[in-house]
Image (tube, rainbow, N blue to C red; front, side):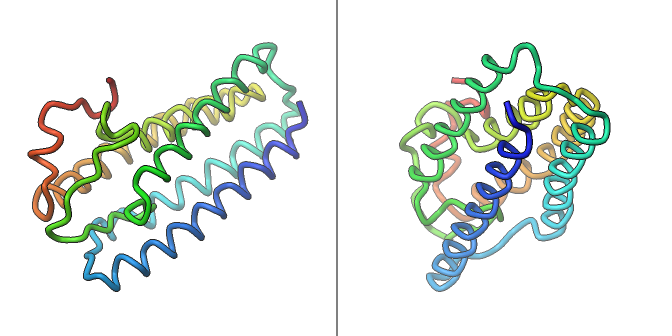
Length: 181
């Protein structure tokens, strides 16, 4: 498995997601949506960029090779990408990398959101473990799993607060788990 090709794919995917997010942000704000969580957003972006840079650095500088388990890990990665596409398509214009909420909106409860509250964060959790493990970048996997846990504690609290205050979120997701079906 070629790290450079895989890494370019992941980076291009992230850039594509940012394009979608920016378009959705513009559309939602034109409809009166409000943005929440600005204080932590820059740190979240820095964490994700650092994750990619640290993965590349650890793999290239330390001459890491693909994991002996790479076929299984690649399957997990592909499944997470299918889930990511399902998440983005289920939320449509509501999907974003920022917390942008349209006051009074009915919360989307289709696709993976029928089963768990935060499938997008589940994808990120799995990716932050699997991407470095594909190439035996254990330090990056450990460090950024810990950083991501800390970030999600802030992020999810802020997102749920905004959704509860501005939408039908509490009624819709009262009985659904955050991460498990």
